[in-house]
Amino acid sequence: MRSDPSSVARMRGCLEKPSRAAAFCRIPSKGDARLEHNGQIREPHWAEPAHTMATRFAFWRKIEEDALAEKHAQPSLLSDFILGSQDGLVNVLGVILGVAVASRDITIILAGGLAATFAESISMGAVAYTSTLARRDHYLAEVEREKEEMRTLPDLERQEIRNILERWDFHGAEREEMLEKIVSKPKAWLEMMMAHELNLAPVDPTQAQRSAVLVGIAAILGSLIPLIPFIVIGRDILLGTAVSLIVSTLALFSIGWWKARTTIGRPGRSGTQMAIIGIASALAGFGIAYLVSGGRGL
Picture 1 (cartoon, rainbow, N blue to C red):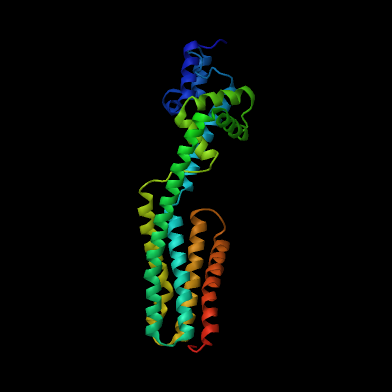
Picture 2 (picture 1 turned 135 degrees about the vertical axis):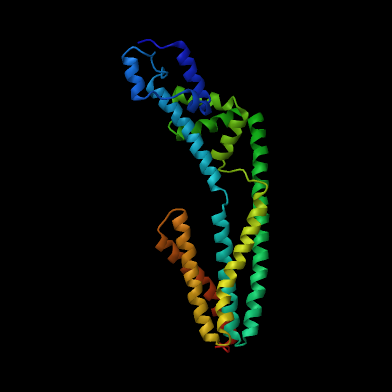
């Protein structure tokens, strides 16, 4: 059965521009095949060999999936919240435990905890802001370096594209065909090098502000968790310390559990790891204060 030349051209156009495939290159259903068998329609648009079409679509699907993966790899609301809340909770817990072991004065304990809360939140927000800007500057610098190498060392850059395609199981003539398509589009060539050679993703200019605000707020919320028991209980320092440790442990476990439920992993294991690491860090401050003060506050 011979192929309709117009159908072949149409199919190739859709393969070269995958965004058109949904509108113009419909896979024939069983109903379409039955009508064709009865002689009521022309042959399907799928005129190229099945293997060629499958590999081409696999290539474009790989590009799309990796682009989504790079996008999702950027700092998210979840990671910023976990960073701020965990850091705020652990640092302030360590501070107030250290102050409590050295002094039984609730005013001093609360003053130290609140001072650490706001100093920590401002510091964490500033770190989130500057680190995001640093990642953006690094990405832009690498973009310029790649552009220069594409101009001055095109053969080397083409070979790097070959290496990427070979990792995706494209070889021989098929690989060279894909290579020529990519390098004929400088923007696609550059973005592929950035994502799959350097493993870098673009950084939104507004991301620094959003990240700083979220990390700062999360740090304040996390810092208040170990402080609240002392505020509620008052002058019973031993009871306040015990309740603060219990509440903080539960909060850290909940953060780890939520992280695993939102992303991937075993919630129980993730929560336990988060709690152990956080409490161990806080107890380090407690231990140092105890050694220095001799435990006069307890």
